[in-house]
Image (tube, rainbow, N blue to C red):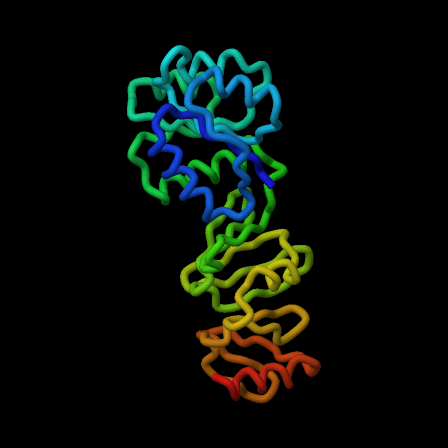
Amino acid sequence: MTKYCIIDDEPIAHRIIEGYCQNLSYLQKVGNCYNGFEAMELLNQTPVDLIFLDINMPKLSGFELLKSIPDPPAVIVTSAHQEFALEGYELNVSDYLLKPFSFTRFLKAMNKAISVKMPTAPSLSATTDNTHFFIKGDKKVHQVAVDDILFIEAYGNYTKIYLVEETIISHEKISSLEQVLPIAKFLRVHKSFIVATKKIKIIEGNRISILEHFIPIGQTYKNNLMKRINKL
C-alpha cells in the first residue's frame, strides 16, 4: 500500500482528494492535516509515501513546511495559485495541480508520482469499481479500461494486452491479470491467452477469431469455453 496524507486548510479540498483516491486501491490515507504544524507532527510519527500539499496555509506555508522536511516523500502540490508553480518544481515536487482539477488531471499527477518518486508502488492495481486498472508498461503507468480489452497474450517474459486502439506490453504475469479482470467478462482459453468473451466473432475448430486476430483454444480449456458460450 502507498500511504498518503492531505495537508490543506480547506475541508472541501480534503473531500475532493479523498474521493479521487478511493478509486485507486493501492492508496491508504494515514491522516488529514489542516496546517503545517499538524503536518509536522504527523510526519514525525507516521511513515508517509505521498503528500497532497496546499501552499497558502495559516502560520506555516506549504513550501516552508516542505523545506523543513529533511527527506520528503513524493509531493503533489494542490493550489489555486499558479504563480508558485516554478518554486514548486525547484523543490522537486512530482506535480502541481491547479485547483479546481479534474479526476483525469489527478490521475496524470499520480502517474508521475508513481513512476518517478514511488518505485515500490504496485505494478498492477484495479479501481474499486473494476471498470479500469493500472499497469506498468514501457516505463509508464497505463490506465486500461476493461471494456477496451480484446484479449491478453503471455509472450515470453512479457504480457501483451490487445486493446481496441493499441497494444500494451508489460512484465506483469498473465495469472496476475486474470485475478483483476471481471470473471463474467473474460475467460482463459489457453495457457497463454485470456479473451474478452463479448469480443469473440467466430469460434472455428480450435481457434477463436477476434477482429483480425486468431487465438488458439487449449484442449483443457475448451469445455469451459463452450459452457460460457452457452450461457451468453
